[in-house]
Length: 237
Image 1 (cartoon, one colour):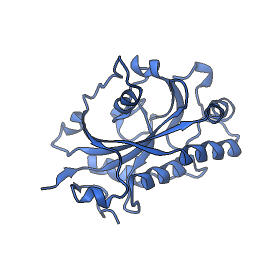
Image 2: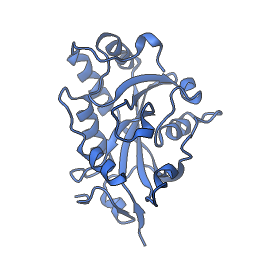
Image 3: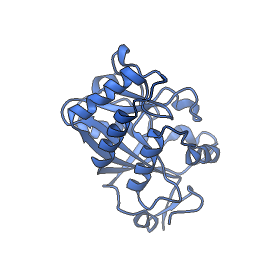
Image 4: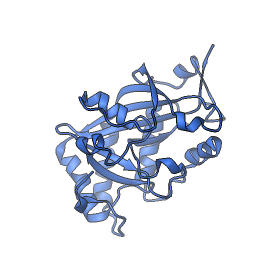
């Protein structure tokens, strides 16, 4: 019998190849899921019917979030309907100048450095207050950047503001995350804590329950043999 799954999310840990800094997305006040506003999440997004694999989901979402156009996050809006720190001087406020050359280099460095890390099956108890909702699968990848490329993110924040057209891009240190500054969303704290083998766990305020499923699989077809998805409603190709 297949395991019921609500939806599939793909994201990547982005960090320099030395040190304990992380490039994360902070949900702003416009984020549709209210309790996650102000939380930090790994860069990524939800699966869509057009995707053939978790990596394809991740690559599509990275390109959309780095686009200069509004990405129109239809999978997120559909899902919501279905569901019912850097130093202060580096805070990425929105500015008008573009810095497109740096943005493109950062985006391509992240995309070309992707490698699979771990699949997590998550159950989020606070989403079940109005009735049972099945778990989700969170496919986590890893990108370690050359320090020069990672420092370009800092430069872009200082000169142009956030890199993304949805949410706000931030750099946080591991100590920030263990001290709840900010709180993390979904499996972000769990995945970073696993990868860094932390002695002090990153807080899990939503009491997310996890099951390790091994590395992300090459195709969604490999999941649908074992899991039955609610979303996307059209299934995977």
